[in-house]
Length: 249
Image 1 (spheres, rainbow, N blue to C red):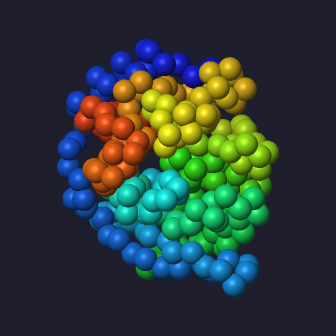
Image 2 (image 1 turned 60 degrees about the vertical axis):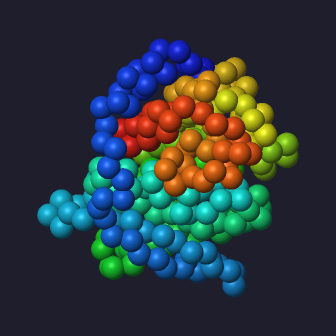
């Protein structure tokens, strides 16, 4: 299915006005390191819902973009936690995200994770949600984890940025739902270089392009003026549209 741009945009713009503006209101944050099969390790930031009576509905692996860090995705992570979803944010470096071998290293190590830092069993249902180059990275990880029989329920691609080399493209399309939301072209998303994949139907997905959205809108309230200076400004409601799109899966 080719990317739809008009009807879905109107739907999500209307719905964004009916969601909570509350941010950083609940949940517990933990940090740990994930040891890889090499001598490398990466930091993981976990956000666990407050509820003790109802287990989390799912686990979302939320990956930040290039030249950014996990803290820049914290507003979106909090929105997921408010929906009783556990979130883990890997601290992948830029060089690791571009390394064609690194998705397998990460998937092998993450597949061994059965509990969070407090010893709670992780939800079996997993959603991969990546921003910018992080979207491309997690699209590869999703396939690797699914091959290991992990219950990957879907992949959310937030303004993905791809490269010129074959290994810098999106990972193989899996028989699971893919959801995509794109911003206006800018230097921060390589002039929207992933858009032709979706518009042509070459990579089947559902979603839309927000024609007034900045690349920074995917970070929401966690973004900073420097990002908007380089990537362009946008109406405030775009971040709410994106938050709705990701949290109401």
